[in-house]
Image (cartoon, rainbow, N blue to C red; front, side):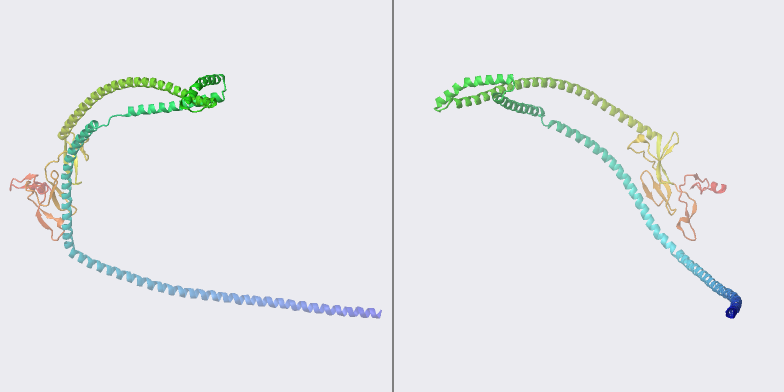
Length: 442
C-alpha cells in the first residue's frame, strides 16, 4: 500500500511537474507569438512609413525631373523656333537676292529663249509648208503612178495571154489513162496465167475442171508441133519434156489471147472516151462562148457604171466646192469646214470630196504664239511671217506691247488689221479695239 501510494505520489508529482512545464511553455509560446506580432506590426508600421517616405521622395524627384525636362524642352523649343525664324529670314534674304538676280537676268534669258522659239516656230511652219507641197506632189504622182500601174497590168496580162503555154493536161490525162490500162492488162494477163496453172494443178470446181480439160487438150495437140521443131533443129527430146514445153507455150498463148482481148476492150474504151471527150469539148466551148458573151456584157456594164460613178463623183465634188468653204481657226490652229447654206461647222472634210481637198481662202490671219507675240499666217500658201503683209491695210492705232516683258512697257503700232473702220477725220484705218468710236463707247 505504501509503495503504491509512493508510486502514485511520484506519478502525481511527475504529472504536476509536466503540467507546470506545459503551462510555462504555453505562456512562453504565447508571449513569443504576441511579441512577434507586436514586432511584425511595428515592422510593418516602419515599412509603411518608409514606403510613404519613398513615395514622397519619388514624387519630389519626379517633380524636379519634370521641371528640369520642361525647362530643357522650353529651351530646346525656343532654340528651334529661333533657328526656324533665322532660317526663314535667311531664306527670305536669299529669295530676295535670287529675285533681284532673276530680274536682272530675266530679260537676257527671255530674249535668248525668244530667239530659239522664233527659230523653232519658223522651222515648224516651214516644215508644214513643205509637207503641204509634198503632199500635193505626192498626190499627183500617186495618180500618175496608178495610171501607169493599170497600163502596165494590162500589158502584162496581154503578154501573159499571148505567151501562155499550151494546155497539155488532156495529153497527160490520156497518157495516164493508157498507162493505167497497160498496168491493168499486165496484171490481168498474170492473173490468167496463174489461174490456168491453178486449174491444171488443183481445180476446185467443175468450171476449173473444164478449163483444165481444154488446156490439156490444147497441150496434147501442141506436143507434136514441139517434137517436130526439136527434130528440125536436131535436138533430142522426150515426150515428157515436149509435153512440159507445150504446157508452157499453151499457158503463154492463153495469156497473149487475154492480152489481145483486153487490148480490144481498151481500144473500144478509148474510142468511147474520145467520143465523150469530144462531146465535153463541144459543151465546154459552148459554155465558154456563152460565158464570154456574158462577161463582155458584164464588162460593158461595169465600164458604164464606173463612168457614171466618175461623173457622179465629179458632180458631187463640184457641189461640195459650191456648198462648203475651208477656213482656218486662229485659236485651235486647225482648218474647219463651213456649210455656206446651213452654217454648220465640221472639223472633218466632207466625205464626198474623197482624196481631193477644198482650197482655202487666200487671206492673212493674225495669230499669237506661246509668248503672246503676234505673227501672220496665210492658210492658202501656208506662209508665215513676223512683219505685216504689204497687201493688207494695218491698224494705225498704238497699243502697249506687253509681250516684250520689259519695264517700262513698250508702246508701238497695233498689230491688228485695219478693216474695221475708216476714220473720217484723219483718213486712216483702225481695228475694232483701236477705233475712236469704240474708245468713246468704252
